[in-house]
Image 1: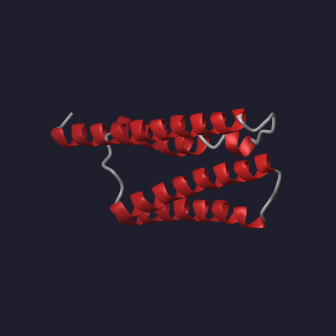
Image 2: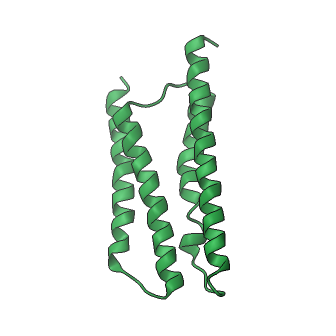
Amino acid sequence: MSTSECNHTKSAVKRAIFYLAVSIFTAVCGGIYEHFGHGVYSYFMLYAFAFPLILGVLPNLIFAVRGKPRPHKAAYNLYNSGVATLTVGSFFEGVLEVYGTTNDLVYVYLLLGVAFIFSGIIVHLATRG
């Protein structure tokens, strides 16, 4: 393994660990919020940790195993923004459900999150050549 591939692998593992920490933090925050929710819970809040876990840890571990460099900065930032938007949106929807209310604008989080992720993937595919 060359020095460059080793650096790419270390960088991807660091990003995976960061996303794992974000997943754990989100799960703990959701658990604490649910604990004080007087028996009211929301699946959106319970599973908000899944977005950084599935969309953050897994792709970075794949990059680490393959020894591929990090995607172009614009692609990387768009993709990360999508993961963050989906995580915050899920947590926010959970807060609203625990509180006992709804808001139609919560779907904006889903739409923007998916749009950011697909934009990041498209930019990555367009700039990897």
